[in-house]
Image 1: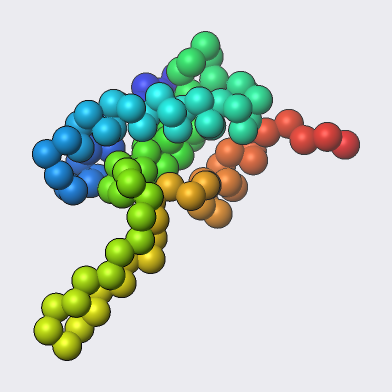
Image 2 (image 1 turned 45 degrees about the vertical axis):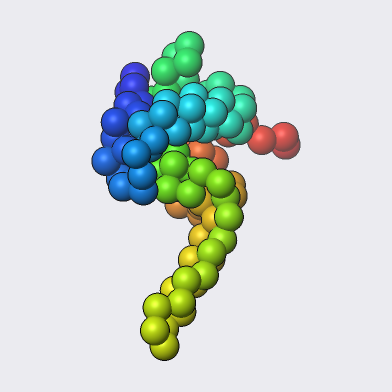
Length: 107
């Protein structure tokens, strides 16, 4: 089983000085969400398999990149930088495709 390393999440984001502290909080949080979504399938204890570990890493990176979950717009001269992504707002389509492989659905 793969272990999700908060350092991998920090590597994907370079937002600030407290990035490591936020990653240390985000990884267990996103892991719990993934485990609940899959109803523990794909996990051995709290350890996800490689597929789910990749989902946890990418989702955690989005969370760490914008922990306040706020959109922002900055004006630089005549240009406006509009950051519409508010970080983690749920699973991306790619992440959901992976997680759905392990999710047991009602029939």
